[in-house]
Length: 331
Image (cartoon, rainbow, N blue to C red):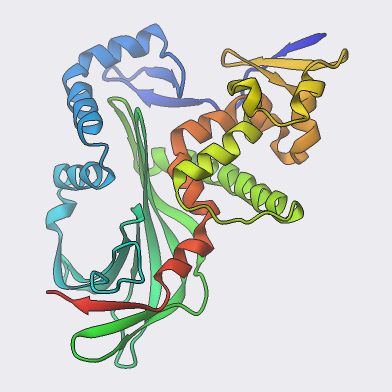
């Protein structure tokens, strides 16, 4: 049996500057080093407040609004009209479209759904024919120690056509194209990355997520399975045992995992305290994902960005859920 160790180049660590101008390394999803622990102690009140609020509510919108209030962005925009689907009994989720105005007077719309609480689509104000352009998507993906928050550019259009009375219909011809992350923030415990410092880690993580979700869709299609999942819990339950059989009970492991695990020529790789089965990696994943899984980077992305992964995977389904929704003006 062969055993290898990995250093996880460029995938497992984020660097922050402390108050003395030196660098401290925090390994995401692992126990911080001693210098990082001392930094955490210095910021203990900030961290405890965040942790209490998160555990008490588990509410994505509360975290998002709290951050907006602290940064002042909550006061930079005002809502001028609200439409929602509360009167549409065929829609399980509450869909809402707001007409808003920025601090400089520029108008725009924001579309949200109760089924996707961490996602907001923004676009131009509809013209006289109801057509509008989607310009960006805002995503907030939370995890137990913090969140990833970012906006990326969209290329697409839709129609918000007037119906009877105060009702209108929201329609998309096709899912808008997701382009590049424009801005973002990363929170891990009491530490934050903003601006350019957050941009590179967010863009790198998105590249890895797109590689994973692209393979997921292909794997489902090649096995004649549906790509749709009703919720994140169902998505996680289905994929976790397939992606990380080393972490689940024997009865949940894939049928072929036992024979691969017990093979006499099995190779393993220790990374972040987990022994990864290299033969299983090669038997299931494309080569582009081998290093990500064997180094533990794939697991870190899964644990720190699961809502984000689910949204990227379900993008066409998300847009389809907005389609042909009757919205009633309530403000």
